[in-house]
Image (cartoon, rainbow, N blue to C red; front, side):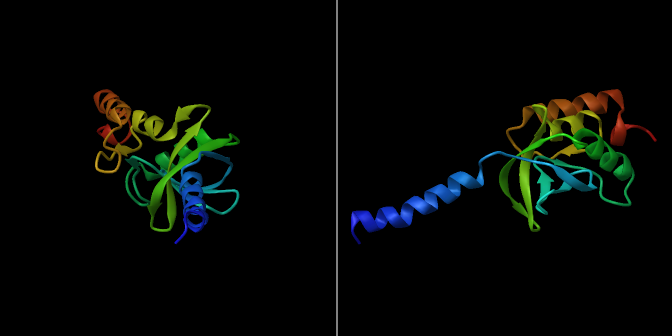
Length: 140
């Protein structure tokens, strides 16, 4: 294989990989639960690094409402990091603030170190919520 033909095979693959992690701005069309939403283009996104209560579990409705409130009418920046159950797992920010960290700070999502091991900010946010007895860490 010539160098030129290797270039025409490798270059598109490199571009595809580079584009996959490029942050983009989306609008939220619908929040499914406290850690999943659907963008205006129909793409499903799962928040990276945290896990919110599932439907039917205590605090699920409040976690869902919090994600709706945080993202309502705001441009949302998503930075894809992987895929899970046909959803794009992404770091998500609104107004420069990390949505996963905010949900953890409110006590409405748990930090998942096995999925986000280098996220000390998430650990601190969760510890703050635990210490204050907020959300899932309350005695309610």
